[in-house]
Length: 250
Image (tube, rainbow, N blue to C red; front, side, top):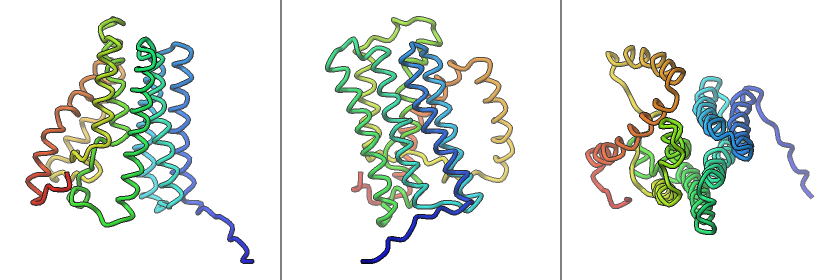
């Protein structure tokens, strides 16, 4: 019998993988806060998970520590932090009032998140579809979908009215976000966006402004960011349509 080779992980890959684990832990912590009824902390935990998720890939490329192990770990982390965590948080927040239907909607969202990530990994191994080759993503990515899914909670925090979003409206909205994840709608890949040299400095200057707004008006800022992303979806389709002649893949 052949002796099985031991698994080894390059030292430079430890840092990005550790950041990925932090994202997973943040998502799980969001569930813990939801169980305790600390809804704002639960949403913030998922937002923090999104920040960590955005960091791990950049750190991996910077350290040249991208590995297949890291890619698999990132997908598992995304399912937990951006699929399971938002589904459970929303179910405990309001969907439980719908009984079995609310649970089915929560399961559908988590399942669509897993399917979206599995499809993304499969397309990376195979020949890239035209959308990916043109710098677009197919469907709403998991971190963005998690933020959109928690949008009803953000609105209630902003307005300080718990009854402004009904369980039925939340269920319909969450089902819509789930469909967007597994759809073939081309969405902007912000990692692939290329800014003109004249625009790079102004965009960098917006970062401290965004941080300041998040510090002073966290829920208003997050609601505006979520709305802007939703508004960008028709423009992403229009932009992809101009770049890709054959739209049959959608």
